[in-house]
Amino acid sequence: MSDDTSALRPATPPTTALRPETLAVHPPQVRITGSTPLGVPLHQGHVFAFDSADAMADAFHSPDTFLYSRLGNPTVRALEDAVTRLEGGTAALSFASGMGAINGVLLGLLSSGSHVVAQRCLYGGTYAVLTDLAERWGVEVTHVSGTDPEELRRALRPETRLLHLETIANPTTRVADLPAMIAVAAEAGVPSVVDNTFASPLLCRPIEFGADVVVHSATKYLAGHADVLGGIAVFKDAELYARIRHYAVEQGAITDPFAAWLTLRGLQTLPLRIERQSASALDLAGRLAAHPAVAAVRHPALAGHPDHAVAERLLPRGGGGVVSFDLAGGREAGRTFIEAVRVASLTASLGDVKTLVMHPASTSHRQLDAAALDAAGIGPGTVRMSTGIEHVEDLWADLEQALEQAAKVS
Ligand SMILES: *Cc1c(COP(=O)(O)O)cnc(C)c1O
Image (cartoon, rainbow, N blue to C red; front, side, top):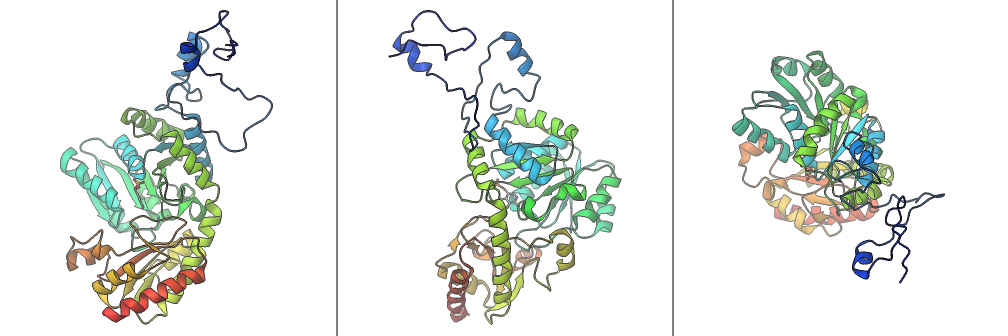
C-alpha cells in the first residue's frame, strides 16, 4: 500500500502516513494536465472541495466555480452550454425533466394574481400545471390559438406575465406563428416562452424570432434513446436567466450528472437523427395520405397542412419526426392498428431512435367523450407516430400490414 498521500490536497500534502481506514475514503485523484478527455467526463460528485477558506467563500458568488451540485455541476454545465449554443441563447438551466423546466420557468416568472396567455393545444402536463396554478394560486390563464396575433392582442392584460407557445403542437402538429405572436407579446413587455421539444434547435431556433425562453423536454429528441428524463430552459438574456436560476436553485428540480451525461451523448447525433426522422416522416406521411384506410394525414411539411405556409417560413429544414393521421375506421381501427405494428412500439413518448405509435382515443385521452376529443383536435381514429431512424422501407412495410389489419375491423 502506498503511503503517498499527496493526492489528498495537492497544496498541503500530509507528512504522516495515513491508516487504511483513512486511505479507503481518500482514494488518489487523477488530475489531468497536458491533454483533454475527448468525451465529456461524468462528474457525478455532488460537492467540491477547496484549498482555502477564501476560495470557498468566493465560490458562493461565482457561477463559474463549482461548490455544490444543486447550484452547478461541470457535466450539467457542459450540457447547458451545448444546448445554449444550439439554440443561440445566452445561458441555460438544466432540470430533472421537461416538466421540471416548465415549472421552473412558470413559477420563476409568476406570482399570485398574474395572468398567463397560453396556446390552446398544449402538452398535457403543461395544460394541467396551468390549470392547477389557476385553481390553487390565483393565476389566471387565457388560451389562444397560436396563429392569430389579434386574438393574442385582445387577451393581453396589464397583469399578463408570460406567453407560452409550442413550436409544433401535440398531436395536431399545428405550427405556432412564433414571429407574429412573440412580436405582439414583446410590444406589451410580456416575455415569451416557447416549448421547442417537437422541433429541436436543428429545425427551429425560437430565440431568432424573439423568444425570451426556450424550453425542452430533453427526454425526447435531445437525448433521443429512451434512457433518460431531462429538461432544459435556454434564455435569450442574462437577466432573466439569473432571475429564474435564483428560483430554480431553491426549487431543486435539477439534473443528475449522469442524466446530463447521457443527454450530452445523445445530443452529438441530434443533427443526423433529426434529418433522417424528418425525411422519413414526410415520406411516410405522403404514402399514408394515398392509402385507402387513412382519412387524413398531418405533417407540417406536407402540402395541405393548415399551417403549411407558416411551416415553410419557420421550419425550412424539415417538419420534424411526428406525423398524425386519422384511420377511416375510427376508434376500433386505431386500437387494432397500434396493436398490429411490429417494428414500431406502442408507447407514450416521442423523439426516440425507435419509431413509436400511440392512439390517444383508446389510451392517453380515453376519458374524453367525442365532443371533448374534437375540441382537443383529436379524432376517434387519430394515431400519432414519432418516426425513428430505422430504414424507411421497413417502417412502411410495418405500417402497411397494420393498416390492412385495421381496415378489416372497420
Ligand atoms: C414530454 C413533453 C414535455 C414534458 O417532458 P418530461 O420530460 O416528460 O417532463 C413537455 N413538453 C412537450 C412538448 C413534451 O412532449
